[in-house]
Length: 291
Image (cartoon, rainbow, N blue to C red; front, side, top):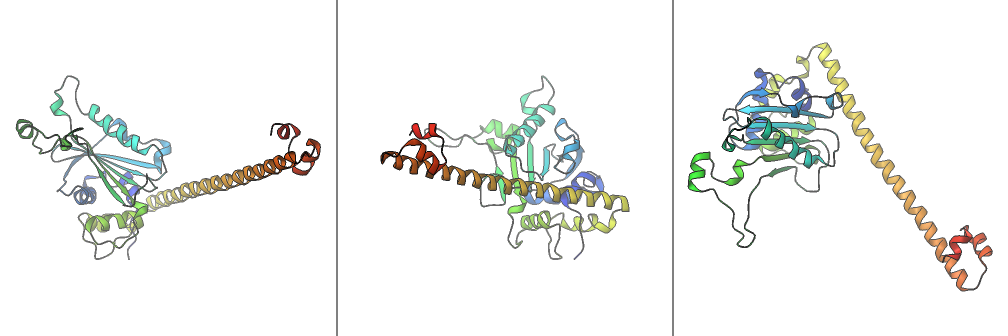
């Protein structure tokens, strides 16, 4: 099996090139379940790369053939407020891509695609889709567009006017790839593309994202990136293990103190003096007196 470049690295260095748009278009077409053609890549305040972000996260902002905005983010590091970050990213784009005084009907449709390599939230699936809808508080009905609005905005539901969010929890994928989306998740998870995979964009990935297409310098930088990812994940694993160990130690210490206090309480009921109780249990006389 051929060796392919990890998707997050390709996002940083390769997929912004128009010649390679087909790879990302294939993923988006598979995920959004409609043909996506990228018109061009855009730059915004939301996707400026900082030093810390070089191996931690990747933002890519694309405009499709319908003028809609697609924000793609790859996140390697655990971030407990990631949901709020998704909200911030789309909110920023709403305001960046409308001119002051421009009519609200010109607010751009935004898709937020988030590829995360950590455990985000609590759920059993590996792919999630979020939309905004309005449900009646008394009649439980779904608020619909008026016929005029549907004709004016060229959509059939209110939710299609709002940002849509997609979350791909790559590390949670542990099954055989049977659908086009699963073929993509398998590649995102393993970096491998089985010969039988035929999801949109994967054939382009086979041609464009081969390791042996990289120059010596590019390959060195790529391997440094992989090393950083390993170090990052090791640090997270170590921090979690140390946290669990410290938690266990603190719990055991509290348990021992509780046990000593219970012994001291029983000795006190028997009329044993405080000095003797302190000698037996190791507790302070003040703590024993407070019992």
